[in-house]
Image (cartoon, rainbow, N blue to C red):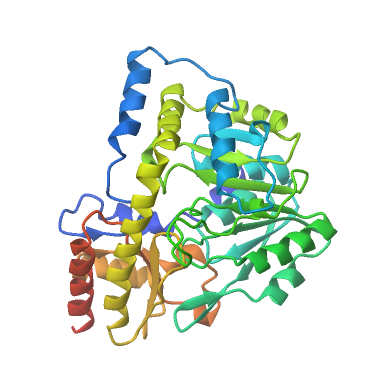
Length: 392
């Protein structure tokens, strides 16, 4: 085995969760998924595909009908003045994580310098490292529980020898979301220096800062088809399809053929019946995603005020995604804290150390709480358990 692979850090989320997955007495909020099942119309489409015998390979890049539907869907989400997205810029992947790994394989050579904006889901840091990249992280900073970007610090890190910038907005775990002006500054800077942007936008529909139905700002709203920009998206979050493993890439013009080769060497293609489920999801999107977003907004608005009412807890309402990122004063080791909460309170949260460089003092002691619960009463029960534990 490559030494680099053996030295990769294991997921601290899994360190906490795997030790208690079978415990029915634990309220589990550690993974980034809703506990609601996929809508019936999507499941029915997959069943019909299987009954029809669609159990064979498809094109590496995905069914033409799905690529066209994704291009139309994404184009409709873009703001005024954005360029329409052509289907030949779409590649269907086996989930968002596969799309991110394909992006790293396509862009990063051993020794390349890659900048990653953190806190962030640990895979986004690990994937360029798997390719042998030199990874530098630039951190958002917390102010009274809310998170902000020091643009000068980020741009200073994006030097002419930088191969790629990897960022996630809306952000897992903080809920921080890039503004349109911040995106414009980043895009213009990377254009000047020839730096690739890999934008993880899987939470773009889970956006609470605008009016109902608004999307989070996307780099696709500003970019030209020739820009060095790869946008990663997924059916997992906004269509309640985490276990289906279906996502897509929006690529620069002319890049899809090369990505098709990488898909062949990774997964060959996504299963046809799963792609049929994706087509059904897009067809029923007006009935599915707005309801998902409204429910998540309600869950956020149940959980965050309860947490803010606890003494010594720092947390702010997330602008997007499906997490509350909180800090309990006096607890700097988030892994130990998360493990204690499981054992002593029956409360399963993800340790913040999984998402950032814990060497920074202001980054220590954070926990991620996924609030995507079908029954918001479970969130209240979780806060009750935390409250009793803090009083011990």
